[in-house]
Length: 337
Ligand SMILES: Nc1nc2c(ncn2[C@@H]2O[C@H](COP(=O)(O)OP(=O)(O)O)[C@@H](O)[C@H]2O)c(=O)[nH]1
Ligand SMILES: [Mg+2]
Image 1 (cartoon, rainbow, N blue to C red):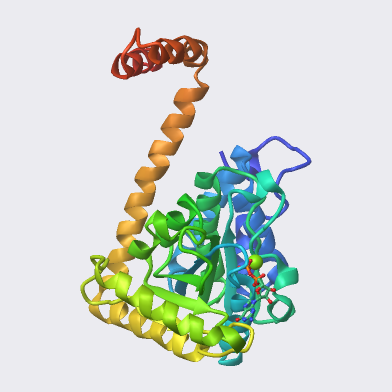
Image 2 (tube, rainbow, N blue to C red; image 1 turned 30 degrees about the vertical axis):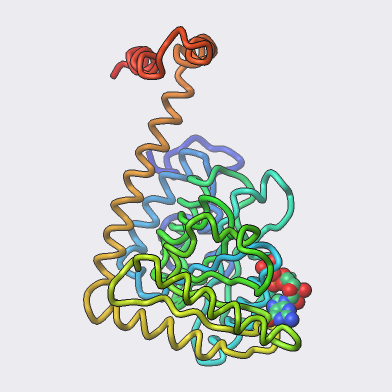
């Protein structure tokens, strides 16, 4: 069913697919924003239209450098993106800033991609900032952000920055949708606090010690050396790339040219060797399976028979009168598989 044949409803999308396509590709920012809203909508008829739109835009997508940026609140992500983005637009790039923050709905705070924290970029005609959707599961937010990357690329943005918080699963989700994943750290803030224990060193393509300015500069350099050392004992993601550890000051715009040249160096290496295409293909396939798991689990949990039996099964597993495997058998039987 396409949205055009759907029953009339107040919330029905106002544009046709052709209008979205021509709006997005002609650089109409309002239409770009509307296309993203369509993608974020959970209404089935909007979803159908969004997927049709993505198929239309797909041939125009894929041509950007996709960079993930992680760091705990306060690490300087907004400041960094504002400065880097301004540098890049100054070099004639078009920069889209997206965010993955599944916690923003619950906490009401720390909505990543907040335009007020990126004052320069927010008013820059060659930048587009889209805050994280404020509702949804990690899987849901991941899907919309992934699809939004494609729409922004079709709209001519040649650099896409995806911001996320340096805690938990959202980092892994973002590293799976970008070409290059970097972590912003601050010297002396404590590894635990900054999520280092969560295996982030294993997925990072670069570590940048931010706030290397004023009295903090020496501390940042010492810290960088320590992380460099820590990285040496970790098996790299790719034998052709040793993640650099560098010091920067987002506030003073220091070290950002070096940082960007490393990203383009790695991107060039991946593009030339064919590794980029392979990596993106593998990301798509892994994502497909992740979505299968998400959707199946959702369907299973919302099945009325299963909903009815879950409390009993949980308490039986809790008190040991049933093994977890037997409980799963019962559930799947009720589900019809
Ligand atoms: N000294 C210094 N302060 C910085 C730097 N980058 C960010 N900050 C400050 O750190 C605080 C948090 O920065 P923000 O960009 O909001 O961090 P976010 O929570 O990761 O987005 C703000 O007060 C910034 O001004 C830097 O390079 N040097
Ligand atoms: Mg911020």
